[in-house]
Length: 330
Ligand code: BDR
Ligand code: CA
Image (cartoon, rainbow, N blue to C red; front, side):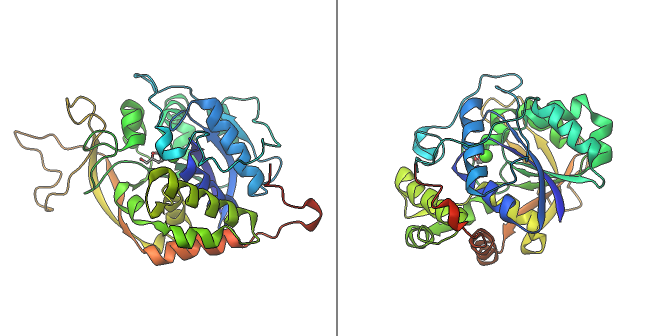
């Protein structure tokens, strides 16, 4: 099992990612930190705790509140026409039956990494403010105990989803993104290109809603609702795809390339400038360009059928305790 820490801004697709990570026998989730992003922090925490109940996550799995806003700019949460009025697809889950721990996210990361016997994978599915502050505060611990960061963010060939070229998690906090990406930690970037490729149709999603596994039926309800919210016949599983690359990296195609986060562009702030030039020019200094020393493994495409199957089979494997009835009806 891969020891894993997740940083989330739950979010309908962070919810799907949490279900996949928590139900996967390949991962051992040590803790979850919450960042403002898709919504303000209180709603992110509430949504996260609700999903832990659905997944029947261990009662002592720590969830910590982190930052309330990006390092420099004001928070710009996403519109309700993506994540719904409650921020998690409006499927009416009951209030959470658990609470966050009383330490800040950065201190939870410190404690869990200090106590880890083997290096831990960080899975970053939110604006990178928490992780940037952690890396600045505890750089030696990060270098010693983080095996790598799998990070949903950026765009490779795809267009942006904020300005024309920048992706939301990076654009929300470009300075924090620069700190994490330039940290020297091994980074796997899961950009909008594979993110947009992993979808379920409305019909497939409807089928999932009747499954006896609480995690899979809730995932189906989230996907059905998201089709309606976004007015589409398919819904992306989004951040869950990044988790899938940790569980089954052999089903993802990656290329190691130099990357720079654009901080100053008038039209391009938050763009992930990935140097796709042919090898002889790539990374070479000239009068126009000082190359970025940062190299990341960019996920350029994934085996869609394999990850769809991984998502469904992993979430399906959850028996409902007969004595508890249906815990999902509020
Ligand atoms: C990212 O932004 C958020 O809305 C999603 O949860 C995902 O992490 C996609 O740009
Ligand atoms: Ca997210």
